Image (cartoon, rainbow, N blue to C red; front, side, top):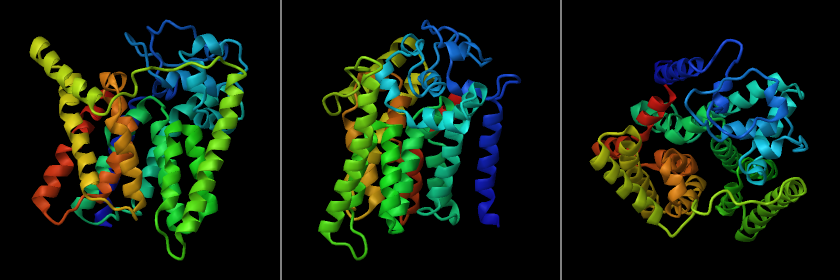
Length: 375
């Protein structure tokens, strides 16, 4: 039983953080990410609800997804003016639609459910990780802790975003494949794409070697997985275009490899030198090298037959192309690279104890800022 004490204490710590987001009469709606200073009008269904708005803030992206959740058919006339990029936001329909279903169409319940869905995903993530990180020893606890309390995971919970649900569904897909349940894996893989479109890459997980399966069988499964996800996602995209005109969220989300990262680092140094200490720029300066180390480690120790490695390296490659818009708020980059961080923490070699502890701590320092930002 003692081996579970650190995990229990971690759960209690997160519970304390979570309860700090509760407001009488407004529930956990702070996690929806509304800000008092955002200049777009709220949708009509939302205007009828009592919800928390952060003072002196424009809020964050979750405020758009929860308004979609109040009418996932997208037919509410006020939605187009209430959402910054309607066609882009509406692609990520899984959490909004699930919130509507679980809330039985009742708006106050939908608001609370959508605000807490990422909490459920964090719990699921913590439990799924025990498959690869059994609760044995401090090294494994550190691996687990730095996944669950990573900047990417906590920021997704803090603002009811799509990154953590997508990563959790991907780990569920890997689990099902390891249990030789490819049909169920097709479903979780397709659902992950409806959570976040970058999950289309996850079809590559079906290519990894498995007992009693030939290369042709694995290729066939990967094609089926990719096709199922693409058809489902494509059908939904087509529907959204009948409601909202297509738009591009930001042209500088993706760029030439490493250039956005370099400008993020140099910009942080400049800000710190010219304006003094800022937690935003300090932690961006220490986090980017940590993420780069995680990617370099996975690249240097290829394990093509390991689905966790494949999962991590896919998002590691994406990490190198992230542009200026992502690194301006570096926590967005941490969310996007959450799969890479999870893979690194699982696969990091612990034979050399001093090197293990140095590597896992220094490459995960963003967790400190994640907790600071939460508080």
